[in-house]
Amino acid sequence: MTDNTNMHLALIMNFSASPHTIGQWRLPRSFRGDSYLDASYWERIARTLERGCFDMLFFADSYTLHDRYQDSPDAAIRYAVQYPRLDPLTLVPMLSRVAPNLGFGVTGSTTFIPPYWLARNMATMDHLTEGRIAWNVVTSYSRSEAQNFGLDDIPEHDLRYDMADEYMQVCNKLWSSWDEDAIVMDREAGIYADPTKVHRIDHEGEFFKSRGPLCVPRSPQGKPVIIQAGASPRGLQFAAQHADVIFATPTASGGMAKHRAAINAALEAAGRSRDDVKVIWGITPVVGESEAEAKAKRDAIQANIHPEAALVLLSGHLNFDLSTLPDDVPLSDIEVSGVQAFARGQKMTAKQYAQRMAEGGNNLITGTATQVVDKMEALYTQGEGDGFMIVTHALPSSIDDFVDLVVPEMQRRGHFRSQYGSQQLRDRMFNETPNE
Image: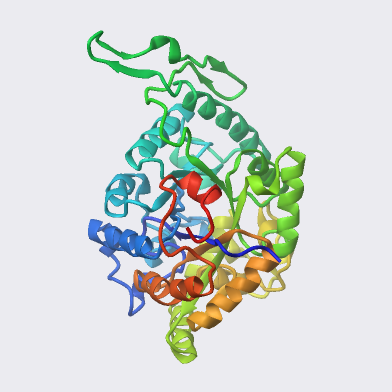
């Protein structure tokens, strides 16, 4: 059995009205739909997570408007299907001050953003957060994203990962272009930094070219914590080579145990140990003071999702117009690139899976705090993971519920810290003493 004396917890959000549970802005226990535009909204969430000793607030992000369904963006706009979506990087400096221990994960695409720009911004954020920044590395997936950046279509799947491999080389070189002792601050001699310890990188590869050095001094962590969620064979190969944390969905490769085995095999092929990477499983807990209260919350979530909005979301992620298919077509029968990660282990129709995805994804857990933690313990052992990424529904009340009800039960059982230990995020993820 996997040791579970120090589970890790992150909250996954995006800077929008309905981050993952579609229509959540309408739920009775949510703020009004435009409240996510207020700084106070995000400050409240960060403070709540800090109170619950969470490892990080993780911002999923993309640059797309889901327009594959009926070849139109209208339904995505009408139902706020992960749209509109603002830039979460702008929130990090503000939130890092009101939650001085909380880590922050931010998404950035290796397909569209120049590596120098990303390396500079992540190094800057690592300074401003005092070593609490993480980068969720994505290669992006949709045609509409590509068109927003002036391309006709998204590059082919494996090619995007080939580009991402070199992208990581460039960023790592840039983050290392300042030696740790490059800044001398000699006021008498008038020397701020030693130029012999700041280096050009002169990278010229197949996809990228950068001279360097980075214009940001070496940051507290040296480089951000690297998060990745690739589930395809090529994505797992990339994650095994570069990631510190892998965010995994339970059905990504036909079940948690099977997916964990695939991760372990990829790590071995990359010459890394399973202890080199933390695996964090996604769950959507719906918790109440009683079973009846939790079930009522779950019923409200399900009733609140417009069936068309659910199909819009899945169509966007599959890059395929599900309106062209009958309602009863099995998900596994859809022959489009990327559907395999969704379909493995599923017996649902595409419409049924779209509804499940719109509720917040896989591993929906409904019950009292005791029942939720019982299920978390089982999943922790089954997946041989290191913790959980919490998907929300009503906002911010579902976060309050988890911190006020579930976290104390985890602490009572000795699964989770009651106070922060390590300040820097990487140290907290890998070196913190259990229950420190």
